[in-house]
Image 1 (tube, rainbow, N blue to C red):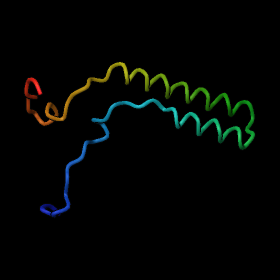
Image 2: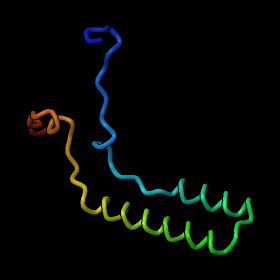
Image 3: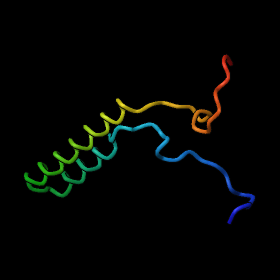
Length: 80
């Protein structure tokens, strides 16, 4: 429904900066340790986490930082 009083604009997740998967890595490590999984499971999850980390670092290196004004098509004013 359009025109409702409680509508507001928010930034999309694709416009947020890349975050490294620290928490995800720690949670996976703790879960695998807690359930005493086999060595090959450690290898599978270690490989998957390695891929996630490489992709995250690559995305962090190639991201372009823009302001909200640039996203809306306005040019930011010079100075303060």
